[in-house]
Length: 155
Length: 249
Image 1 (cartoon, rainbow over the protein chains, first blue to last red):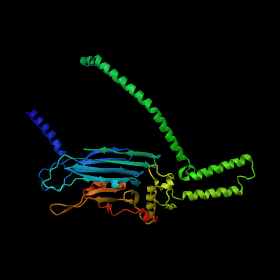
Image 2: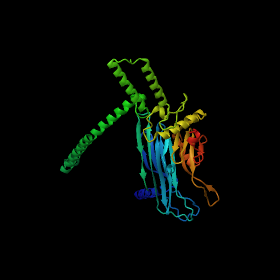
Image 3: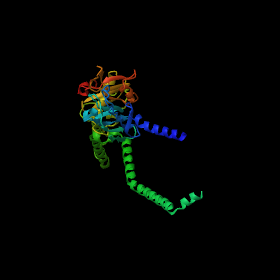
Image 4: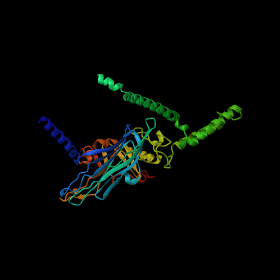
């Protein structure tokens, strides 16, 4: 009897795990590219939330966030973009509109792409998203230390 | 215990362990052997960089290349004069004139922009940021074109002179040609298009948050609409400085 209850609990816990993954606010780091010396590129996304016939839900949480960071010791340049695609729609956001951004004394730049559905009911299909970026930097004060990080990811 | 010993004595197990050990040893030898030339190359590069750091800027190439060549020429002529015991002494007035002329040219060259922006501005003694690019690295920042860095440094120095004491750095967007100074506790935000919700409310989420590295801990809060009171938000599309207008270039 106790063993049966125990097995039920185990099954219940494992069956609820995927549900917890569907929480709309949850941001999952897809890929972090970190130089380990103060420079990083990070892409995060929410999980896909399937909302059937929910007329109250106007926009969904299909969302990708790209963060580029260099600490204050770096000067350098970066560029990149992130995107989400779903329901035959695509939203892509370019850092700096497609050019380069130079920086002095470090930088933090976080950009995001989001799909907005105006139709109701809001029925999502499996989509994809991701981003790419490249940041380069030179730490003048650390023996001309130069580094570059760049992730690329899809989902 | 006996079973364990039997298991370990199994010829396949022993063979496997020996094979893995040999393979690992071979891999290590190969790894060490293949890395040797790269290690040598890295060491040479480090020595070259170190040597460049030690060597005074006045002797470096690039922007001061003319100066170096002139100095070398002058030194050579000096040596010639000394060794040949000719009429002109190295310490004569003629030589002093030549020296002072070269020195003046040196100073003029060092005060002129390497990318054609004219003479460099004076750096205030209390300027808190790193020295501008033309002072700390006359060759230009190794990555890319030195021009954007020089523009940012010029804008920051002017802002400092105008009384903005909270600058921490800057960004230069090549798409819109604007410099975005990084101020302490200040973030630039860009918004998505406005969405009118079914209940009539307007929803306009933030598409981008950027600034100096000090804003990193607050970005999630800013995005969620809970900006801490000490953080100031500036509209990225309306802010930014046109450097050419600002610097009268």
